[in-house]
Length: 158
Image (cartoon, rainbow, N blue to C red; front, side, top):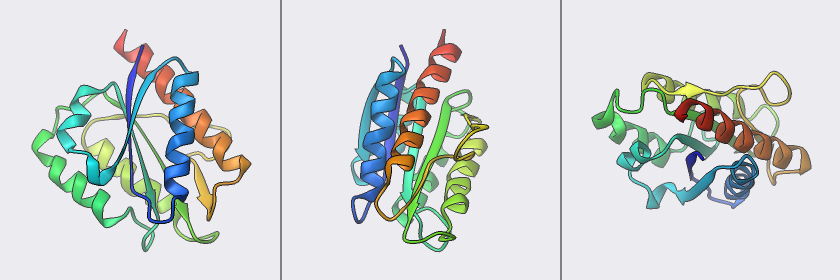
């Protein structure tokens, strides 16, 4: 059974709603999950999990400042997350608001840590996105991400 950590930032509650949906997907996939707002998380906690999923609102096409600081602080653990499964999701105020570039900014940090990224051929390829409040499509994409992360982490940790 995989242990997955979800860390998110959320100003309006939209990204938090997505984090909860990812957590439900992790549980549906047979994993155990802990969900934390970035202000309540420390980078070294990532070392204790088989998978880490990060969610951010979109700010200028990038992850939020607190999440960027979280990753900047994680440099101390460079190389120690190699092989850990990673994933990301994002919300923005409007279409074309930078959701995909936000997700890619998170995934770039994960790849530099040597993490294994789970994409999808169907749906939101890089990770789930929502425009304003997550709709049914976005919630389903979040569930799917959680299940895939949980299942992949379980396979890799066996």
